[in-house]
Image 1 (tube, rainbow, N blue to C red):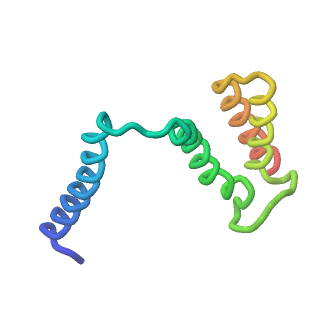
Image 2 (cartoon, rainbow, N blue to C red):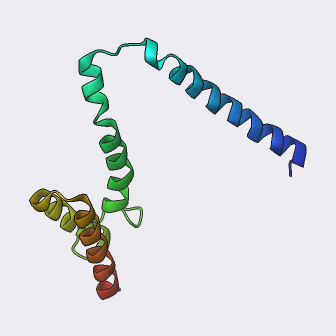
Length: 109
């Protein structure tokens, strides 16, 4: 078990590295002009990251592929996808997805 001083120094070191990297990028941000194609493509980064986080949870809730109708994660995400396509309202999409997920989890359990 590490002592308290080692833990504090470890946390402080992580802070310095994280802050240092971000500070350098933010301090130079106003001096750098990114190409338009790069700025446009950076708009897709949040969607790509969220998809990478959610897809394994949706298709593999028990650490194995489950594409059946007994998968509440899949049902909730499909309902949210359909509502999102039709209405294009994020809050409604999230609410319907959560309601379908919990309803199917309750009914299938």
